[in-house]
Image (tube, rainbow, N blue to C red; front, side, top):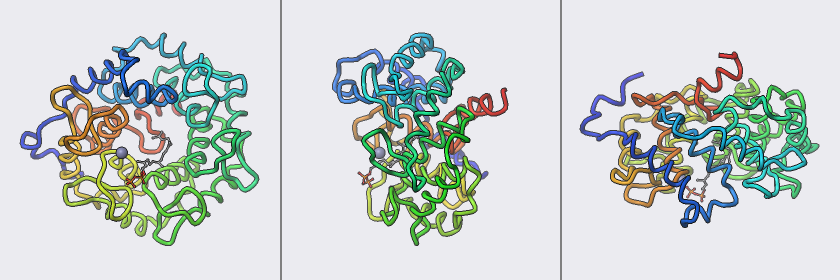
Length: 323
Ligand code: GRG
Ligand code: ZN
């Protein structure tokens, strides 16, 4: 690939140490505003923060035993995981729990049948998935179920053909995908549908040129990406859009150098962390998406991330090839 890093010095650099310290400090400050707001989805925040630390080469600074034992305390008797201890189970938190355990090579401590039965039990007759027992249906949950079961080597517990059919029924004339049939294309949903189709070996359902064109049009003048036409750019789309472009092999259709610069411009160069847009307040979510986006762009010194599983490539290789 043509190097987006030719002008690395004029672009400024990724503040690896500061971002790692920022994430470690958020974990310690349990009473501040961000932590209180995030209380109900702490396990999700743990996945964002820990994956970022791993991509930065800093995961060893975390006490893995403490994290793993806390994750296991978030499991509900149904087999699903809640966002925190004692919270109701949901597919989203179940994926985060599996991903965090995968980062520490600890998925073997799970009762895999129990967890995968919980996930499979949320598949509906039309192949779609509900997020939890209350029933909301969304292609996000199709991705989460498929990604989780693949990581547990238990995709056979669901009807994969029907799951794929439902996702394809959410495809729009512009080549993109929405949250339910007929819903507008949005880059976040596109990541979910493209990721799920990639994991199930069903990418032939995608018109790669049409979707690639819609996705690369998300790049705006500043170099950042937006999630839909006429919207503002946001660092998180460096993940949702870029991962989809990589999976369909059209990443060379955007200006990578300008996107790298946009992400680097969103850093808090003093205190660490990355924000959605330059000069906004940083958070763990956008720090993850900035670092993950730079990893997809092969920024020097970062571990590679897998665009479909959203985990470091070495972790995915360990799961599927035992190395
Ligand atoms: C493991 C990476 C990973 C994900 C798990 C939760 C999930 C699966 C996927 C979420 C996909 C999604 C819908 C992302 C979009 C999130 C987002 C920034 C929504 C904002 O939408 P609007 O309309 O913002 O508020 P815009 O940018 O359109 O103005
Ligand atoms: Zn965002």
